[in-house]
Image (cartoon, rainbow over all chains, first blue to last red; front, side, top):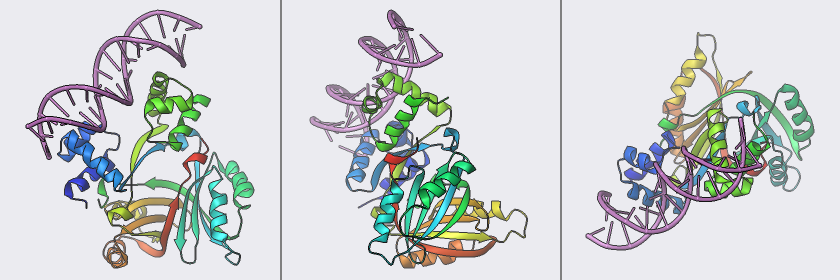
Length: 151
Length: 151
DNA sequence: GATGAAAAATCTGTGAC
DNA sequence: GTCACAGATTTTTCATC
């Protein structure tokens, strides 16, 4: 379903996502036409989901990022679904992850500064439905190494 | 430094990252020429970091994702730096986040299946330097709502 | 100083081999 | 899979507000 050439393409694409097709083709050792066809195949196969614009939040004035670990009160019907639905509506929540086990979810929240974070926390997080427990961690850095993914 | 037009562009770009420039220009209510110039300005200003290809790991055969919460033994010199440096070298670690506080870092690890995860965990995670404590959470879903970001 | 229209340059996708 | 080309897209130029 996916051969070494495809993997090489994906690897190069992670290492240099903004490259034009011709340059990416060079690096992956194929011609642009081949690359174009393989990308199309991977998009159709659902392996390649699309592109995402990366925004530098601190540069935009959002200096603070906090990771919240959430446990829900699951005694009521669909606590999970209504919690997620409500959390998605909070603009400052930029990421939601859900888990199997004792902890139910993790939210990443961004804010301009600490007072702004406090305000979001009180007004928009603590008011989310079915909360049982929250633990907060102040974020320092996010590191991803695009060149060493297991493609 | 960043006006409403820029914000509108960023917002539309998050909502539909794969759109061609001309279509994006339409939605943001500017001409392609203006859009091109403003994007360039935001790239230079460091607000826009670039585009990133999104890979569907399960479709690629990586069905398991685990979130590891790491506490380090900081009694030795630069535990932090050497831990991060070593973690980056593990291909299956697709994300590293560091924190201020009692918990030091969070790693996202992907694996083909549970036995494969166990193998990575034993051979590549537990061998990382300066580990004091690890807590693992099995990942269920990752949700991001690009249409409700605080741009 | 930034914008819009149109030309110029570049890039992508398709068909033939 | 490759080559060459047509079509589409992006960037730059130039005049304008």
